[in-house]
Every structure is written in structure tokens, then in C-alpha cells.
Image 1 (spheres, rainbow, N blue to C red):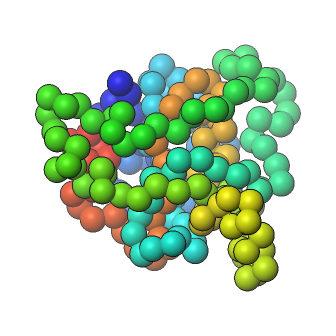
Image 2 (cartoon, rainbow, N blue to C red; image 1 turned 90 degrees about the vertical axis):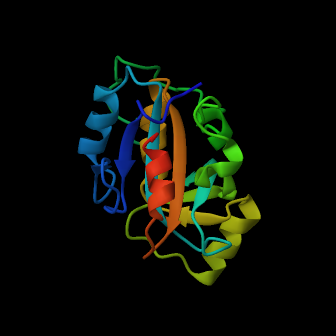
Length: 181
């Protein structure tokens, strides 16, 4: 069972205490993830757009529509060139310690899940683009989580991805749960 308490925590919303804050995905995020390759999991919180409801969502899968891949370039010796990323996302229930908390009492357990589309930073999709993403299976989009997940997946880390509606913050109980407290 992956532990939230011991996971590397990355926050692209810059609103969570105890997390590593990053404005956007870049080499410093890659370095942070790779420096913590001994961890079993990375928790990534990103701002999202066009979510089906006005609540944070747990990422169950993704579409990489960034037009690039952070693994392009020199081969990183710490992982395979072409990693298999099936099942890289963990379910909230798999992160909870049943001896410490009941899933029904944990605010993470009540968050809906969905498929995210990763877009290149700065791209603002049109209504037609959003409809095309939905036809492909994406329910919302964000900019940083997908490339960060690819780096984590390359070195065998599991990812708990949380997408928060843009302009919102996680409530304090959910944030506390993400820290493994």
C-alpha cells in the first residue's frame, strides 16, 4: 500500500502547506521527482479547467495532448526509455491505512474521479477543442500533472493526481488527508 505520508508532494496551485510548490512543470520538477525515486508515490495537485462539477477530482487516467513528452532527449539511466505507464494512477482507497482511518470518514474518499487531458502550458482550448477532448474521453484539462506523471512513471512511482478547479483551493481537511495526517 503506497503511503501518502512518505510520498513526494508537488503542488502546482501554490496553496498547500508542506508540499513542494512549482508554478509550472519544468526541469526543477523533473529533478525533484527523480531525486525522490526511492519513494513509492508522488502526490501531484494541479489546477484544472472544465471539470464536470465545481469540486476537486482524483485523476484515474489521462490523455497527453501537450504535443511533447518530457522523456524526449538523452536517456535517463534511472528508468526505461519507453516506460509502461498502465496503472500508474493509484485509487484513493489504496492510499488509506485502515488502522488509522475509515475510508468513509476521509474527505479524499468522497472526491469524484475522472480522466484529464494534459495540454501545453498557455494553450486555451476553444469550445470545439473541449468537445473533441471529451469525445476522446477526457473530462477536464490541466497543464502540469500529465508531464510530471510521465517522469514519475518512468522511474516506477505511483501517482495520486488531484485536479482542483482553477481559482479554488482544497479545503483544509482534504489537504491534511493528502499529507497523510
